[in-house]
Image (cartoon, rainbow, N blue to C red; front, side, top):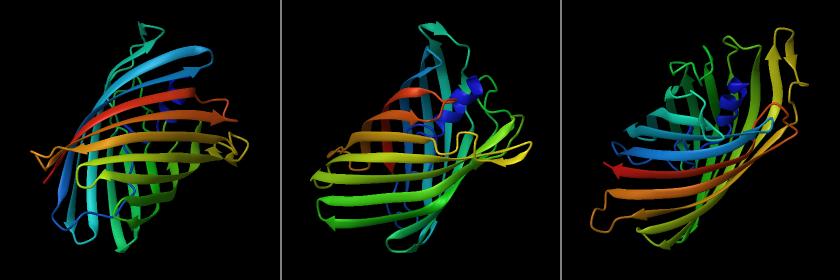
Length: 259
């Protein structure tokens, strides 16, 4: 049961590592460091869970248009109705790369390495994301970013390896240019079934949907122009996915340092 709870965490993109953002790769030799924390709640089979995670990440453009990044999460605690569920420790480490092959499109590839604490991470389960991003700037105040890709995993010690189509859209509103930005977005993920011991099976949650609307703000400190803070809130709803948690809520706070 707990493995399903962890797997559903991969459907959300706030604290679990995925592509850093939906917008163009930064200038050559520019980068960003991130330290953050998130608190999430969800319900599974009539049981209520809450989890607190911290994470640190780094990204850098090592060649014009080519970005690499990594993220290390740490689960501080998982509670079930106030009691310690004994699911904590280092999470699976994520690596990502993006290549901006034309000004408004990126190709990306993410991999999550199965090195985390086995109390809440998939045993020997490698997780991958691959896809394309499209972004455009409508005017000085409004940016649009989007993503379409696929998520798949190895079976590891599990009975099945699920497959998802993952998409996202985001609108950024530069309320105070170079200082204060508000944004809204939506993660939409469609289950395509899974590979099992009997081969590909669409019947294993195929057609199920995860909806994850979110909103947040980013503030760049005027006195410290390299430092910014980001706060966001995301809701999650699973539809026709009986083996996954529901009513997910994620509160996220992160500090980012440009270099």
